[in-house]
Image (tube, rainbow, N blue to C red; front, side, top):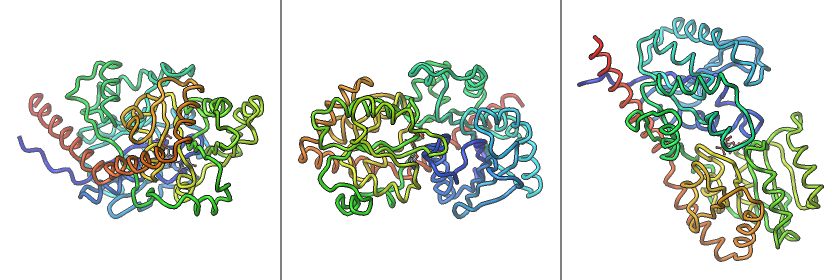
Length: 412
Ligand code: UDP
């Protein structure tokens, strides 16, 4: 059966704007993913519009993020609202989206929804336009709850299950996520499409360690362990501070944490822990920086640690590897396959600070091993181009459109 070609798609990402600096409280991998995948899909011949909630009053506003790739800010609720407060404004977002599309006379071939908050809007506009819909969860409430002591709103859990069953195809970043979707929601393999993300290889590439340290004002001889990301418990930064206290080589090791913002006091709970454990003078804190500046942090580090309780894709691990720096990561979620144990870094079984300390000491104590793993890391990360990620996403769109057309024929 011939399905019409896909020429233009709408992405709905109500709270994850591709233009926000990642690393702050609510911005991270999903924002980076959208920012980089949209132009890559457009470069492969399919125009992309990403609809997201405006972070300032007024709108709609349109921004080009590449040839045939746009971000459209729609106003729905106070721009300052936090993620959990957005729900009552979803119907308004949907109305603004329909108005914008009508005013520009746009026609799409598919709707791609990102994160649970976008699900109801995306499903409803896809139904209104008679289009196939695909879903990317980025994170799942059930996994967050299982892997940590956090509780997620019941509404989110219900919405995720409904979205998984209602979508024409569910996108997963890894085979591990596919298994989770299968086990959690009973979604069959043929309704899940595995399409990984990528890493910006022109930005993240091996550069000189000492020069980067000089630019950042870091000590040239200390061992540097880097943590990058939102400083929230799920990312496990406290595990690293405790690990530092257990390290044999702690007297010559510095833990550098990058992420969060001062206004949110995100680091306060970690600072207290560092003082309690007597390692405060071995830890340096930096609020989130744009990726162009992160480059120097990766380059200046000897190793990056990713002690997360779960990652569905784990961009930080990939960025570090692309920069030639091995990764010591928890053996969970996407990290279990992103990091090749013994080749591009080390996988640590649990979130036990002693295990992290052991692996970090082991690598930092062996510069030859560190160098070899750095080379292995670059080779591995280089396979994750955004062009490949876009091709795999496009293959998923074609699958979704085909399935949609077949079902329409059966019903018709
Ligand atoms: N990031 C950044 N500046 C920072 C901290 C983080 O640009 O100060 C970016 C980082 O480069 C990565 C993303 O935020 O691309 C975090 O993605 P990851 O998949 O590791 O975690 P998530 O935020 O999705 O949980």
